[in-house]
Length: 184
Ligand SMILES: *[C@@H]1O[C@H](CO)[C@@H](O)[C@H](O)[C@H]1NC(C)=O
Ligand SMILES: *[C@@H]1O[C@H](CO)[C@@H](O)[C@H](O)[C@H]1NC(C)=O
Image 1 (cartoon, helix red, strand yellow):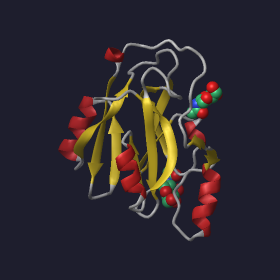
Image 2 (cartoon, helix red, strand yellow):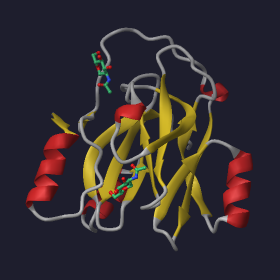
Image 3 (spheres, rainbow, N blue to C red):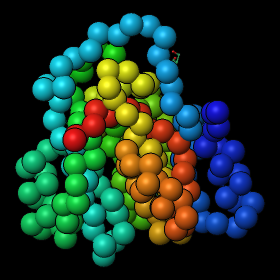
Image 4 (cartoon, rainbow, N blue to C red):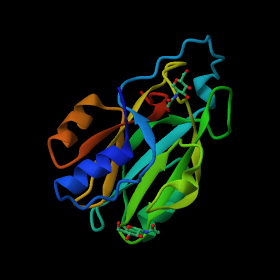
């Protein structure tokens, strides 16, 4: 199944929620099986994508940079929560850039593999946090995206349990943002 965010935005507007969902982006809700036989880059070349959280601004933040983890935990009140998965630091065969976007008014980090991140409304593009697979291949697993429009926060997780728990607690499951390699 595939649906567009603009439809979801319409739905949220209809039921009176404050919506910060970017419009015009298509995202899948079920795994995208590849039919070709891809070249798989060894997992040893992938690096951790860290997950951090700042409770004061209700913002989940992801980065592959240890220096940035050090910085935001020291001076910005973020707490290191986990490694959400592994990403490639450079573009290897079959991968696509994982773009970081941010809204500094609502304190919401947003991650997408869309081709033109600058067209996403409501966010500024901040850069690339690594390279991930656009479909299920090479042992990569779905990186689920959830959105809480009340507090303007996006969560990304490979955990089906966390996805389903969050979906019962004000977060809407929006789809699969991409496929990361499992960190354990
Ligand atoms: C951030 O979100 C707010 C509320 O949705 C919106 O008014 C604002 O334009 C957004 N900022 C950017 C840079 O798009
Ligand atoms: C899913 O598969 C199709 C067909 O192979 C491909 O064009 C597309 O880029 C893949 N990824 C996503 C996220 O749709």
